[in-house]
Each structure stands twice: as structure tokens, then as C-alpha cells.
Length: 58
Image (cartoon, rainbow, N blue to C red):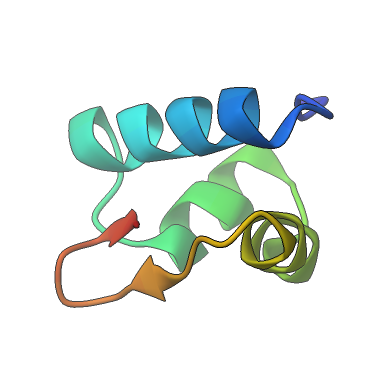
């Protein structure tokens, strides 16, 4: 899957998928064959951090 380049679009897409389909960021990345490091780094640069307990970026 190609991830959006825009950080707000990426934030929205990842949180929607985490909320509706995946129990963890690791499960999402494995299923969609995307880099967890890339997602975390791109969203961190935009000011978002992953909260494992809540299973979302904020």
C-alpha cells in the first residue's frame, strides 16, 4: 500500500485503520506491508506520537 505523503492525511488514514481494523500498529504494518519506522518517523515529524495503550497517534 502506498502511504499518503501529506502528514495530516497519513495521520487520518492510520488512525482510522487502527480504530476500525487493527489491534496494534504492528498488525497494521504487517498486514499492509508498510514500514512501521516510516509511519512513526513521518508522524513524529508532524508532532504526533503513537500511544500503544490507546492504539492511536495523537
